[in-house]
Image (cartoon, rainbow, N blue to C red):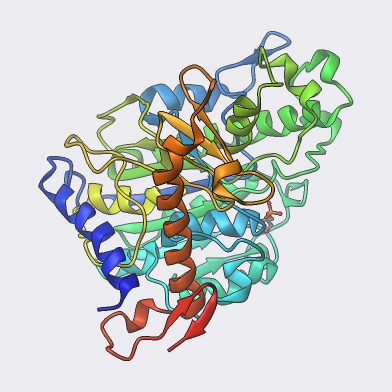
Length: 422
Ligand code: GP9
């Protein structure tokens, strides 16, 4: 076995060890409906502006679901496509560019393929041109049965970049209601996309002094996206699917707003570097189970790479093979210590948060204690900095070197330092 395969096997073995957990297979055979919400961050959840809740539907759903309060996106330059790849294929995105564009022909074993191997239908829905982020090609590789792109929708609610989320969910649900069960349906929302411009009639919040700013526009777009989400949940209930479906919702990435004065409305001290990093990287993850069990706040750290392992765990499908990096988040039995690695080399284990320096030298990075926000001894953080760097290197070897298909082939080619070598 190659060094990479052995390292990946350890990850697989950690998942396999959790197959004794009571939650492994507790929701076997359930449908899966997963929503990736555009630019949906954590910082404004539960908050009000001008006397109105910004995300009333998400807030309600957070109470009824397993809500992961310390969940991070792991995207890089590939933005929405990176979130999709990290969540569905449980590997790290590229440092620059997008796996969807650069490596769409490589072998990955992503969530739709794993679910189809276990009797599921698998469909993906996104109301934009199918070629954007090379989705037409990548989704075939990911083995979806069908990709519903802009051309499949009636443009009856033009909003933002294309079709408004309300119509998008409504038309997508017309398809989902007729899908063979169990189904895996993946919906990627769009209306809350930068630059967040909505017509006056759709701006329902009084954003007070943020009116006319990009932050005010962002909150209006989030409020609309939240209302659309509420309609989606109601429709699932009306179709009798809510009690048969694991409903997963997560934010894809940050909103690209880095004017910290605009955040002051929501946070006491946005000048603190750790808090800024956490604001940019924190996105929500909610998992609503068919029987509504296991609702509540979960504080253990997690990242997008952990979503698919979590789903297979609940469905009782083994993810012991060495093709993924993530670990199940929703377990009764305690798993391996968690480390969320960001593409830029920053990491957190829940206790510490490491932010690399511009020169990339580990000794020059800054390591913070999460509970106090104080700087800690960088040297004490070095072992985990090395673990994070190893994870990024192993993932790059697999993605760039197209190693997954060859793991059981003795002539496997490894990529060392980003370059293929025999
Ligand atoms: C459009 C949308 C773009 O299809 O996914 O998202 P982005 O990566 O620009 O956030």
